[in-house]
Structure formats: C-alpha cells, structure tokens
Length: 250
Image (cartoon, rainbow, N blue to C red; front, side):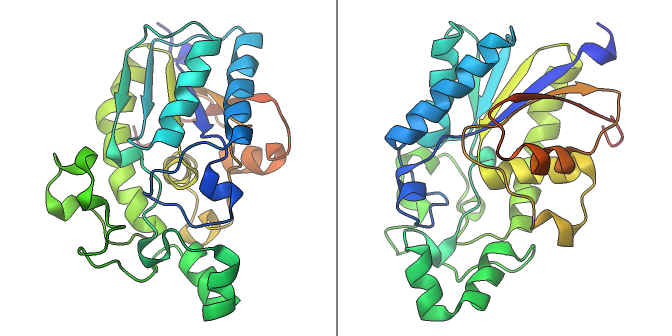
C-alpha cells in the first residue's frame, strides 16, 4: 500500500457528566452526559457521511471514551473490528483536583494558581495520597498495573511520556501495515500525540484545546501540514477535516 493512503482518525470523547458540571475529571470514570451521547453519535454520522471505515480502533480504559467509540462503531456498523484499550490513552490525572468544581477551586486558591495547575506543561496539581478513595489504584481495572504506573497526579509532560510509548508500540505499526485506524481518547492524551506529530514547543501546547465530540481528523502520512493550526481553525466546526502530516520521527 502506498504511504499516502495511510489513515488515522482522532476523536475526543463526548461531553461527560463532569464536563457538564464543570468539575475536574482526570482518571475519574465519569459517564457521558446526554449531550455527550449526542456528540458521539454525531461524530459517527460524520464519519459515515464521508464514507470512512476502519480496520482497528484504540481507546482508553475510561467509559466516556469507550462509550463514545461504541456509539461511533454502532452508527457505522463496525462492531466487529478489533478494539484495543489502554490506560496509556487515559486523560491526564488531576491529582487532588479530581472531582472538584473548577470555579470553586479558583475561588479558593486563586485563578492564577489554578491556571498554573491546569495549563503549565511541567507543573502538576497537588498529589493525591494513595489512601484517598479517588486514587485510581483502588479500582479493579488498574490492578494489572505496577503500582509505580498508577499516578497520584500528572502534568501534561507526564501524559506525553506515557502516551507516546503506546503510539509507537501499538498505533504506528498498525498505520504502517496499512490499517485504517480510529483513536477515541481524551483532550490531554490527544494533545500529547499531536504535540509530538506537530513538534509543538512546550510553551505552545498548553494553548491547544480540543473540544468534546465534534472534531475528527483524517490524517494522511507523507505530506506536511500544521495540525495545531487546524485544531484551532476547526474548534467550532462540526465537520471532518482532512489532514496530512510528515513522517519525521517515525
């Protein structure tokens, strides 16, 4: 297969209940809100309208991403394709902020401090204690991981460092073999991958925002375009965008 025909589509999960309530979510396993279900279904419809199909899908261990993927597959009658789930595609872990209301947290700690916790590339929020019921290590789905792999907090730099090994070990081989790839994940795990693909500087990646549900990127390898510009241009557009990127670093 020619390199120019390699394809991958990224989808951020639909709105979660925590998104709706303006709460820090992270690794908390919040479900989709009714709006999120609609967003996921609409993403599936956009894919169907474009006549796209897939051979394999990747997602996180969090139900908001899994259910978004399920809705997309339902709309496109693709229940049969292999689906690979990994904790490495989970959202950034927000530590002691998880579950807190964002506005109330800003009122308590100051907007500047909360902005640092949310947006600084290499400064994480306050860590959770492993005894805290919010720590993911208490959940059955993470029992197979070494305890050192289960974060107590993360900055975006940490998310990049755990997401990229999955990209190289699992996704890139699938793309290179000619498989049509669908990835349904989270704002920060997708930002981590886009940062690498587009060589976005640390200070610039913090300004990249990926809305829930609406954006789908169809990427063709061997050509060159600025992904971050396309994310910014299309944030408010309810369309699939055809995107191309270089293979440098593969």
